[in-house]
Length: 338
Image (tube, rainbow, N blue to C red):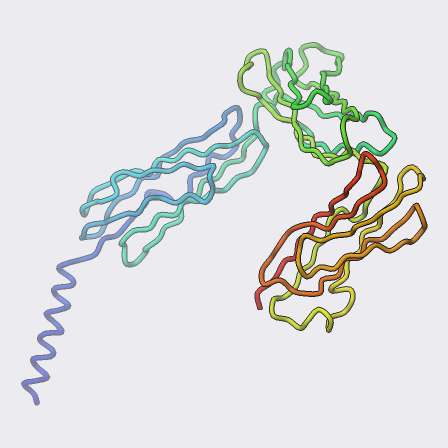
């Protein structure tokens, strides 16, 4: 019995000595946070994290994984003997908007104590040219032929902006600089005019801003997310359900949980006729209800069956208005897993 115990103890001790002799790799970075502080007048920032194998076995690293597509990272080498060093170089695209950014790069290795390290990149970015506001939401009501919007471009280093070129994405959008009291000012006020063109619709357009110094790449972009309204108005403009998959049948739920309503009006008080309500999503039943003949209607959509997963589509109806023969209302049924 004593011999067996001594033998076991011997082998346990021998295995421990072998493991100690084999050792283990250990990844160590000189820093895990790279803070650029306040930065401006650049489009990208670059830097390098340095690392070392401070263990006593071969260190193997996987390719770095940035937290977003705006960051590019590469390391060399990806295999280090004990005592060897390497570098992880990165480039962060800052874009054109003022932002306080914090991005991360994940590094996995065969370090048994720390198999994954997260590196952080921080920057408080102010672009050389700053728009305020950058995004406009023009709403051209029925009966209006045009609408104007304003934004301001500021050169953050205080130097004169100079002459600007403004290129709109559509011919029915025009933009020009409003003359200011000083020609050498660091701020330019921009007037944007949108004219009614084509059928009623939502639109997503833009205006590119160029300077005399930079004529091939825009220094800023003005985004226009708006709507040209027609003779028929709908409210709300989209329908949404949030349901739990596998829950009780729709017939057993409260009406507020399964029924959605869209109010439809004539914007010009002209007689309006609606017909042929439909849904592209199976399980949603739609019908038209008259509230004020020729003026106000209600589209009632009822979720009779819960889909197996989240789906999107639309409900629609036809009208007697030539410019809006068919109107579609977007629908999302978000199914939560139990």
